[in-house]
Length: 318
Image (tube, rainbow, N blue to C red):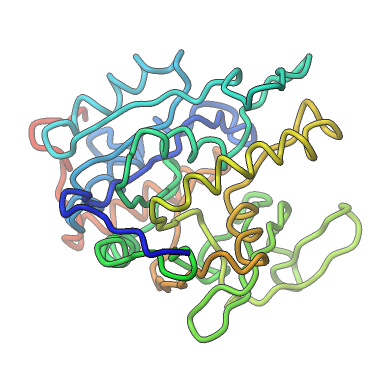
């Protein structure tokens, strides 16, 4: 593979996946207030991203939710970050295929990232979830990586890895990409869709009956990725494969997960992924019961001076 050269104008862009509906949460958790002045989790991520160096963010949302996001999220941060909005649409599928009858769910995180990547040109980009609190360290590390990343013989990517023990909830199960690493590089990633705290420790199940233990120190992906522009055509290619091979067997629920796409490139020897570790504790609202934990953690961080209150000047709804 020949080295891809970027123009000096290709500043790293932050891609925010915000199109999921939060089925386990029971509502639109992306715009649930958690800060003293009505801030959402994504407000803290954008604040951290801006001070890390990002100047532009592309949000992937559902078109019918644009007004909700405009009023609850975008208005306050536009003075701090260049905001672009793209829509994840169910009918946006490869030529020659059709939307299966009865399909309601979006096509997954791989499709969401692809929707944004198509508008980025030759800019490198980070990808995050809108409803996860990642901490300042993650944004600093991924921005620094993207400023110098370039594809050589292999596509050059990065991910921020978290300790599994810092990413589980007391209120139910979670889905995590469990990583195998060697010399700072990702070797393999397996999406475990049902991980939970149990009396004997953290464990996962695939059938709801048999449990397998996991170390709290295991490295997991929380969907903080750094990609060069070379990822976009590979993502297009895998989206077509997904429709050929995966959708026919599970037309109503099949999803293309971003970690699966990365893993397939690793297995084919087409990419390398640097693992950038974060010691920060992850916070999220997988379940409504998680919200109070997030509120208290952010209040403590604000009291310690890590964040101002309000985050955005003049935008306080107490």
